[in-house]
Amino acid sequence: MDIRREFDDWQNHEQGLDVMGGSLSAFTFLCIIVLITTLGLVMLYSASYNEALIHNLPHYYFFSRQLMFVLLALAASLVIRFIPLSFLKALSYPVLVVSILLLLMTLFTPFGQERLGSRRWLQIGSLPSLQPSEFAKIAIILFYATYHQKDRSTESSIRRFGVPILVSLVITALIFAQRDYSSALLFLALCFALLLASGFKLGHLLVLLSFLAAPALVAMFSQSYRVKRVFSFLFPSLDPAGMNYQVSNSLKAIRAGGLFGVGLGNGQYKLGLLPEVQSDFIFASICEEIGFVGASFILVLFAMIAILGYNAASRMESRDRFTSISAYGLTSMILFQAILNLAVVTALLPPTGIPLPFFSQGGTNLLVVLCSSVLLYRILLISSGKIPLEKSSLKREERKAILFPDAGSLS
Image (cartoon, rainbow, N blue to C red; front, side, top):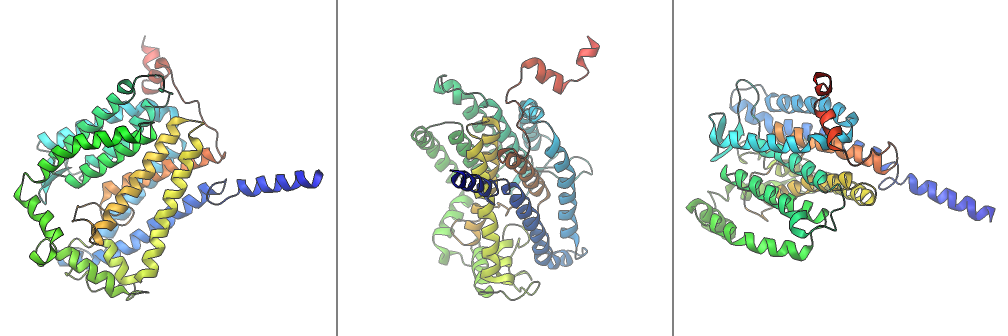
């Protein structure tokens, strides 16, 4: 019996130290985030220095801007790592309102900037331009997690899911109105994932999708350039030098890399042959320079992020719905974005303008992805028992005390 007990204790200890599911999972996740962020900076510099020189900018221009947002994310991570979860819950609704206001400002005020046919950037004074649709992803995740932190299984489906669906559709419509169709699609996919994580039945989701399909098709074919983009994607030979130019050269760059690549910094397609190589098509440059082996390693890192994130969401499901839904949403946000980008680069989808997380040039997206990763890391610490879980719900008076700490002294 003693031998059996010792074996069980040893087995439990080994399971607790499991790299993907035990107490080491958080450390594994942290190492992956540090590694993939570092790789992202290196590959961005390699892909962007020629583009910077073409525009008479320092060769490190895009790299330095990206590094600035990494440092901002590092500062924000210190807050996210130690801020009480109760504070995040109390802020979830105000953050949602602010994100909607920012989207409205982008659409209807002079602060909104239009680039490449989309009005999705917000420029206020000399501050760096921001993309409010990126912050809306975090806002909707926290909103769903807070709204469903209590068990609502006894409530009617309309009461459980009516408000989240309405909010999701409003924000999707605002992003769509900016003519940022790829971000609207990504946001809608994220909302569907959050609905499933919140207990929405798959059959009901398919019905909802069928209702949304008709207006989506009408919107897709309401403008001639969208029709042209779809047909150019379906029939590449009709427009080899137009909309298919990027995708065609992307595939050529991937093939040129072979098994081990042409060497870091030695890629040729980034020298003017592949537009937007530092943003949407950076993975093609990665494949060319470090080959199939290096690109596969990066894909493995993304897969490990997904496994660790969904594993944490599953383990927290019976303990705390807020952290479980948050982990599910944060993981889905990173994973869906990576899948969409890779599908475009490999000609499985038409160009969408979705960046590759951790790698593509774009400060707002990088800031959101890194802050999301830190919050996910914290949830992994909770799920593995490294840090305690706070109580999952707050009374209204407690929320007011968090949001307005001096209100009591004024009364």
